[in-house]
Each structure stands twice: as C-alpha cells, then as structure tokens.
Image 1 (cartoon, one colour):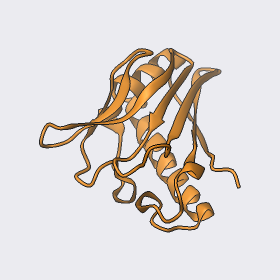
Image 2 (cartoon, helix red, strand yellow):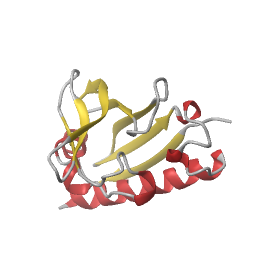
Image 3 (cartoon, rainbow, N blue to C red):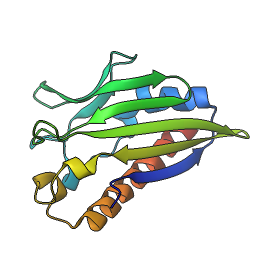
Length: 156
C-alpha cells in the first residue's frame, strides 16, 4: 500500500503570493488537530525559517521550540519540501511534505503530498492504531481542512 497523502486546492492569488503566505504566514492559518499533535504539549505556533537551510518549527507556550523538520527544497514560488516528524518518532521514522504551487489562470493550484508514513508502524501513537487506509484518510482530511483555512488567509 502507498503511504502517500495527496490533496490539492486552488487559491485566488499568484504563485508568488501563495508561496509567501504558505511559508511566512503559516502561524496565522495553521489549525492544530488533537489527533496529530507534534508534541504532547501542543499546540504551539508554527513557523518556517526560510531558505534551503531552514526548518519548520513549533514554538510552544512555554517558549520551547520543537523542530518538526528541515527544509529539503526551497524553490519559491513553485516548490517547497520539508521533513515532518512528531516528538515520539524514533530514528528512521521520517515523513516528508512536498508542496507545489502551479499557476492556473489567475489562481494557483496548491498540491500537498505527504509521504513516508510506511516508516511509522501502525502501533505507533502517531497512528492511533488506525489501519493504514483509515489513518491516511483521516490525515488527508486534516490536510484538506488546513488548505481550506489557508485559502481563506490568502483571500484576505
């Protein structure tokens, strides 16, 4: 079975604006999900350190910063790739998120692919013992909800 989550949505903005909003404004549109927290103390505020050597982090209420993942590709305004891990992941348990921004007329299609979940066992707390198909569906629904909130942010 493929461990890929794939969701897409069009937003009413240029790829440049869309990339900027996705990265620089993530803390304003990101919606935490109780099932898929990064740390037991979540939720915090997400933020990207921009550039190819940057990272995605969550700053918790107590000021501690958790590194969700390193930037693996920073190609404004068309592509962003970053690692994604939860605090409970063991060595070798690694997922990756690739976001592409494609102009479609006067809009931008934002496509999110989240891969690598096969490196995390079904019994892991991050999967809540859901069978893989159900886990992937639930996680995809969360990404759809996140992109809907993102679309509202871009349209402001």
